[in-house]
Length: 597
Image (cartoon, rainbow, N blue to C red; front, side):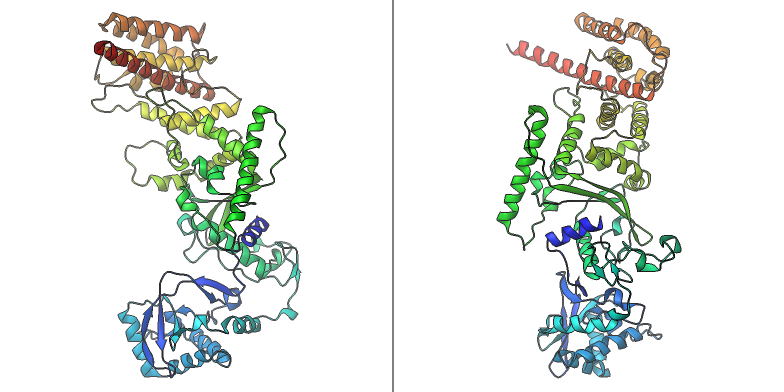
């Protein structure tokens, strides 16, 4: 994973030089050539490349030069303890040391030695509502010292005084394989605050507990990485996490070995994660757009040919592009890698296409397929159903991370879904069947998303073939038992409107588990309901449909249903509901056309 992130950073020119970091500066203290205070100039949200001491701080005695918090650079007049005095002394000592190369530094040091000027600066900062945690810097004679001419050359040389390479043990870097002096501590990765991480960032590599160490080695020796290599890894992760979507309290991060456009990305195009194209436009300025588009187009054509070759039999050279997918979260200040997947772009395309194909299920009118939904929305059907839940997304984050990992693995690898998906979907449907909306004139129909979970689970379990609409030739008796339940419910709905408790509310749950015990009783009720239907033609249609369904069940109604059969029951029920609704709509349309004629 580290090598894949390193390669991504190098390919996309994301790497910051060691000892530098992009920071936003809240305000600048403007000084004249002589050190006179001229005022406060507010900054903006544009990140600025600044010197950063990073892991070389080695304790609480050092701070970042040039750009630091207000509380470090200027003493809080109300702070009697002055907790940042040591860091402040270090800050101005660095400026003194660099004043021979950068004259603006000397002006800042003189300002800090003048009590009157310091008081004016403090009052101005307060007036501009600059807090102690806000980063600030200096402008001298109209020029920002962070952009001073010789700043980079000076800092690249000066920062070497904080470590002695000659005296430190060298080892091979885990990322590049080159000999290096490993970093003692690594800077935190940003972007996981919304999934359990700290606002200040989380450590990807750390050995602060003995349980994390091997062979009695200390800290960085357990996983040696060079400064240059890890900064590339951090830059890649920071970049990828910035717009990564959140799934069940995890961030979904993915990238490709070769650059591809969004419309060639099976994950974005499928939209099963709910990612919009606009949120994920990623055009690097240092890469030629023509080269990038050409490369992406070639990858897309090759991948499309490979997918088609499955049915045409045409032999196509394999596509070398690779995908990488990570599910990440933050735990106790550390980056938690929940899942890591790597494979071929061609296989990813086929498997995502397979996922969308297996999800196909007719909508309530029985004509079009159900509209696609985000995976986050689909996960809601795997929670216990509640009438009102203001913290439903918190429940998703707490209850479903492990299930979500398994689901994503199944989608991208084309493998079976875990059984818990079926168990939770069936529980959701049974809860839903107990409810009936007030003044509703239709029968209860299982949630489409929950049924889609069951359909995919069944199709991947034993290679079962399930159509998107009712299949009268299906071999599962449980499937037709569910269909019979739907016909009985429809008959009652036509014969008796607005009953206190429908047969679905009273019998669905038990019928979906023990159909032989329940369907006989429901059949006797339906005989009574059929007599109340005044339209003879319609009554005959329901009788014929009911007879056909019971013939499809076979010689005997199953006594009990397994988990797999219960899933078939739910699908049979829903698909028969949509078939009956489709037939009803066609009758209404035909009657309307006859009247108009």
